[in-house]
Every structure is written in structure tokens, then in C-alpha cells.
Image (cartoon, rainbow, N blue to C red; front, side, top):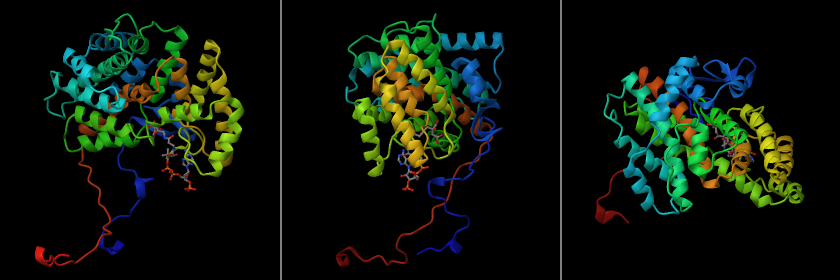
Length: 385
Ligand code: SDX
């Protein structure tokens, strides 16, 4: 057995509480401490109220909120680069229906990289990385929507340059021009999903490019990481919880049984937030608004007692994935697109962290504490039993 004295440092399972990087992008403990999320010093509550996803993405990639001229130019660059390669659409037609939507997104981003004119630029070229990041932000939404249309037996729709990023995704994914409130709610969810410090997928992206690999490799690593149900996959799982409960009359019984059997309830808890996820509080208000708009309050009546009991009995408030499940249902989106939506928003945050890492890089290479057998002689094959 190895002992601590043989290795420097301390072992922190799951890297819990470990500071592995410095960043100027996001602060999870702003002015008020736990749960006071800030992007580049702006409180998430203020950003949620005042900025679009385009403005949030610009803030993350360029470090400042854009003025009107900067926003117009950035928005024009995004709109003009939304199209994805025809070769990708052809490939999407052949990918089996049952392929997981995050696996397909992982493939789509890899294909998009092959057609990026700067894919082979030196990985530390800041300006090239920002241009690639803008193309990734513009194209990821189109790739996700194209797959959704093919799954629905429909032809992928070309991006509509007259629509915002949020409105254009809803149009390309559903074939319908969304209402103003649906567009506003979706845009807000993208702002809230856009970035979140060193979560597992962002950490994966930073580790990947810390070898001086490229931004696309970092993004693909992040997509694979976000897929997991402990991370981005939780929004799809949270919807399954609501469907499993089925009716408001069953909610109380279901949650008491789930707590009694120590069931892990998707959409609740957080590695960092202990007093609640500010994004969940903001989105809960919009869930109610959209439920009222479509005249279906069943899901709010199911969610409420579950939220109340898990928070009260387990001291585990809901995280961002709990309300987004209902929000996307109200927009008529299929559950398999919930996590890809998380990804198409988070590509801005992933890209910002990748660029920050590559601007001032140090290879990330932690150690492991050895717990296996030691000092064993190799026996010739004829003596091995
Ligand atoms: C995201 O990190 C980020 O910033 C991520 C994210 C982002 O924007 O990038 O915020 C997005 O990933 C949000 C989290 C989405 N995941 C889920 O909703 C999955 C369900 N949640 C859990 O699996 C859990 O809460 C985690 C993974 C989110 C956090 O897990 P930790 O910090 O490793 O905590 P743990 O698993 O060690 O649990 C501590 C205790 C345990 O009880 P005991 O065994 O000590 O008695 O809390 C319990 C757990 O059983 N617990 C839960 C629970 N989460 C923790 N019990 C029931 N239901 C849950 N959801």
C-alpha cells in the first residue's frame, strides 16, 4: 500500500473543492457569496433581465458587453455563418435514428471542424480562436436543429437570417416561427446555460487544450462530458421524473417513496451551490408563464411538491436542469434535444475557457495515489496459473 509520505499533495475525490485554475470569466461566489453567479463581473440576475444570448456570448468571448455597433457586427457574423456543410446533412441522413443525440452532436462538431478554414491554425492563435468560436456558436444550433428535423421525417430548414439566434433555432427545430414569449424564454435559457466556471465539461475542454490541442478537440471533449446524467444529461432525466410521477395527485406519494428509498432525483443538488442555483429560480418564473400561455399547469403542479420536499427533507434545492425540462416541453421540443440545447448554449462558455487556457497555458497533469499490488516478480508464462 502506498502511503501519503511517498507522494506530495492531498487526494480530493472528484477534485471536490480543488482550485485547478484561475479565471476571469465566471465567479460562482459573487458579492453575496454562494449562489451569486456572475459572468465577467455581471450578476446573472441582471444579465437575465437585460441581455440576449448574443450579448452574453459576446461578453464571454470578448470580455465586455458589446455596444450597439459591436453587437450589430457580431450578430451579423453569427447570422452569416449559421449554415452547416451539405456533407454533414448528408451524413446525418445516414446516422441511425437510435443514435444518442449527444453522440450525433459530437460527430457533427467533428465534421464541422473539417470544413473550418482555420482548423489548422496554431492552437494558441487568439484571434483565430475567437473566429472559430464564433463559427462554432453559429453552427452548433443549426446542426442540432437539422438532426431534430430528420428525426421528425422532415427536411432540415435553412437558417433564417431575419431571426435571432434563439428564434432561428426554434424555427429550424420545429418548422414554426415561435411566439415572442417562447423566443424570450428560450433566449433566456441560453443565457443561463451559456457558462458556469469549471463544471465537468468545461474542465474537460480546458484539460484537452492544455496539451496545446485545438479548440474543436476541446469542444468535442466537452460534448462527450456534458452528455452524462450527472451533468447536462440531467435535464432530459428531469423530464422523465415528471412523466414517471404522471399526475399531481401522485406527486406526494412519489416523492415520499423516492426519498425513503434514497433515489437520486435528477435536477436536484449541485457540487458547488449549497443554498440553491440562481438559474433555477429565474427559470421557474418562466415555466409558470409558459404553462399559463399554453394552458397546461399539470407539470407545474407535479413539480412543486417534489421541489418542496427534496429541498426541505434533503436540503437539495433544484439546479438549472430541473426547470429547463418543463420549459422546453412547453416549447414543443422533444426530450432528446434538451441536452443538445444545453450544449448549443454552452459552446460560448466552453470556447471562452478554451481561449483563456490557450492564452496562458500550463499542461494539466495531476497525480494519482497508487492503491494496487506492489513488488511482484514476473513469472514465465509456463509458470503462470
Ligand atoms: C449541472 O458543476 C456545474 O456547474 C454543473 C452545471 C453547469 O451549469 O455546468 O451546474 C450543470 O450539471 C447541474 C447538475 C445536474 N445533475 C443532476 O441534477 C443529477 C442529480 N444530482 C446529483 O447527482 C448531484 O447532486 C450532483 C452530481 C449534481 C452533485 O453531486 P456531488 O456533489 O458529488 O454530491 P454527492 O453525489 O456526493 O451527494 C452528496 C449527498 C449524497 O447523500 P449521502 O450518500 O451522503 O447520504 O447528497 C445526496 C447523495 O445521495 N444527493 C442526492 C442528490 N444529489 C446528491 N440525493 C438525491 N437526489 C439527488 N439529486
